[in-house]
Length: 501
Figure 1 (tube, rainbow, N blue to C red):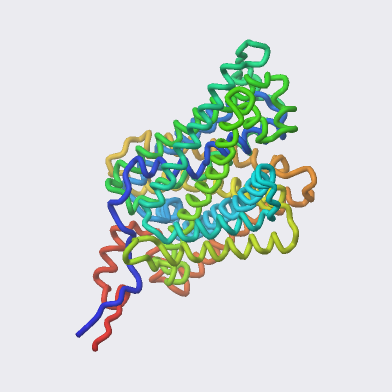
Figure 2 (tube, rainbow, N blue to C red):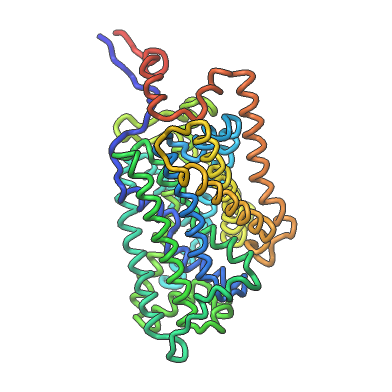
């Protein structure tokens, strides 16, 4: 009698996700209510720029341009490593490893940083409403446990959870927009917040820096490319829908805030009240109950983002483990759930260590943990997208007869590369805008340098693999279908172990 014990599988569970699922994952990672309550109010408060609503349209246009080549490449390279595999196929395998290290740094930091935000807002809400004064880290660890459990379950179950949370928070944002536009300051709806002339003035760098952070999670569609029902169409369709929706939705909401407070008052109100500018408006014009519900949805919005970024990191680790760029145990997936259980558990453990470290040293969960890590993540994501866009040009230059047009192969991705480089430069130069006034000055260069160090380490490791492990190096960034074929041929050796009884 023989029993087969699966130890490693070469692919994630296919055919479980459709366009709607991918849209939910991508938009949930951006967390609309978190963007409105945290990102938009901070943008106005920090920059002093009343034209910030226009920045969301501008950034969405750049991301839409990027998505042309990105979506075209997704039809030819399907890999849970997404940007990593694109860079490897377009700019070389060592460059792909560098991209993967950037991605791991960026997505881990934004995911872990959100635990600080979650802990702080829940602690404040519970203390205000129920006079329960528990520390922020208690609530952060509670969220950590929930995310860790969900990360081990079926991916379509995760999508269902995200869908419910996302729909509810979008309703809350829509209610705010309606309430704000129905009650304009001075009784007149003004369009100063949508005037491009008010954007290209003081504080532009801070506006773009905080704005691009709102689109973090853009890669989510391609990360799940191995698990979708129709890889050639689903990823592209979901990406376009998500970019258009988030860009317009954020612009509308940011403008609505200028309408209800008045353009001349939006900066001072945002600086003084923060997220209270949103919930105060709801309490005043819709009702205290609605404001409290929106507060709860603000909390679940952050939880949804935590889960989405957790899933992204887990799949990156899975892809790198499968290709043995990182230890192979990371490619272990659940036999029943099809989830990347080893990658999920690793990310969960890393988050626990960091959260406990910040709690033990008495650091502030928002000013330190959330702000530092979200700013660091923004730099990493923009750099990774810049490399990916350039990689699209490189890939199609090597594979010109793929059926894609010149617009998809060259013009759009090259234009997106230049635009993203400009945004990256503005983000790095104005990085201090993402830091609280009380933060040490050296963090303005130290935190962005973490991404540079990750890129350098990845490039070095990739070049080392080329020398000492050429077989592993040759498989870096390989599309999932090629991995499946190769692994089936070596299945007795790499996929399963037999025990004879």
